[in-house]
Image (cartoon, rainbow, N blue to C red; front, side, top):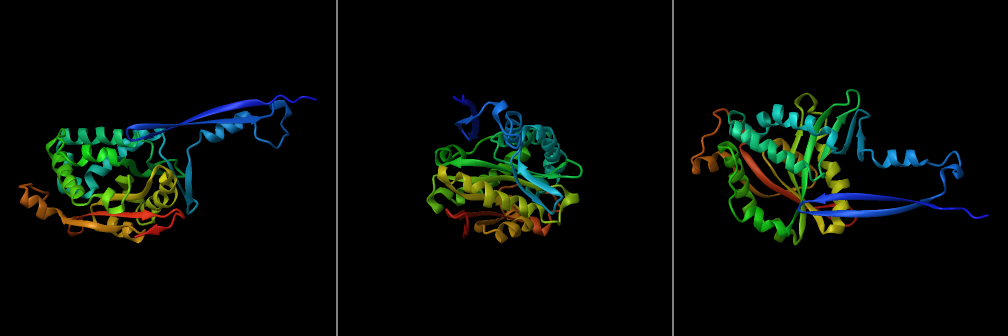
Length: 287
C-alpha cells in the first residue's frame, strides 16, 4: 500500500528595524482522512499557529503576549489618553498642551510598534489591554543615523524631549560598552493607573528580558537597554538586573538649555537614567 504525503508550507515574516527576516517551513502530514482522531487537524493546526504568542499568564488574571495588529487602536488610545499625561518627561514638559507634539508622538508610536517586537498585558475577565512595552531591534548600522545628528521633529515639546534623550544616548555607546552589534531598546513602558501596584509592569519587562530577548541572541543581540525616567521604573529595572550607565537631572538640563518645565515637577520624576543589562547563552542576567 502506498501512502501519499501532503506538504504544508508556512511562511513567517519578522520585521527587524530596516530588514525583513523570512522563515519558510515545510511540514509533511498524512491526508486528513488518514489522521487518527486524536491527532491535530489541518484547521486546528492553522488556528493554533496564528494565535498571539503568549509569554505567560500571571495570577490567573492577566495574559502577557506579543502585540497584535488587532490591538492597534486600543493601544494608541492608551498612549493618547493616559501616557502623554503621566509619563515623566511628557508630564514635565506638558506635552499634552502642544497638539503638534502629540501628533508627532502618536505618529512615532505607530512606527515603533509596527516592528512587531512589543508586548502587551490583557486582563482576562474584560479582554482589555491594560499595559504595553514597546521594544525595537537596534543594530550598529543604524547607530550613526540615530544618534550622531540632531533630528528635527514636529512640535516644540516633543523636540525638547527628544533632544534630552539624544543627550543621554550620546553619553553611553551601548554597542561599545557591551561589544555588541545589536541590542533591544525599550521605547515606552506603561501600565494603566487602576492596575498598578500588582507587579504587572515588572512582569512585563521580565518577560522581555527572560523570554523575548533570548530569541534574539542568534542575531547577535543579547543586550537590553532603555532610558528610564522616574524612580519607580528605575527601581523595577534595577531589580531585574539592569544597571545604571549614566544618570542626569532633568530640571538641571532644562535650566541649562532654557527649557521651561511644568511648575509641579515631582521629586521622583527629576532623574533620568540610561540602564542596560546583558544576558548569557543560558538566559541568565549579567550586570
